[in-house]
Image 1 (spheres, one colour):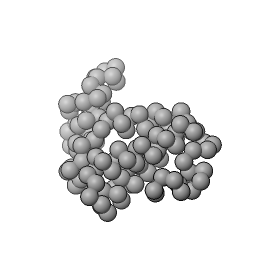
Image 2 (cartoon, helix red, strand yellow):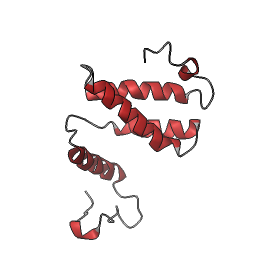
Image 3 (cartoon, rainbow, N blue to C red):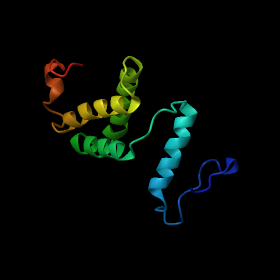
Image 4 (cartoon, rainbow, N blue to C red):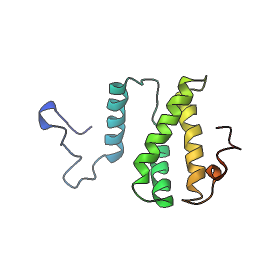
Length: 120
């Protein structure tokens, strides 16, 4: 883990070139954020989140990536809270919907009929 200390304001980066242990840094950040948000039963599927970001960026534009991640997370949280689904199952279900929508870009797709056939 790259060393962030309280005194550096969180500005330490991975190596001089900026490449370093990017995956490990992301895993460490995810772990810290999970603890801070007190959602300890969640295992972050970094590959799935990266795929969502990539696909939504291609389907719409680069700014769609964080919005997609937020909305998928929010939908997953609602589903996990109101059902017997595990957090991982809820994330996968919401991600599947978002990925299907990405296949159609900004036109068509499952929302064109008001989600009437998706049990939403």
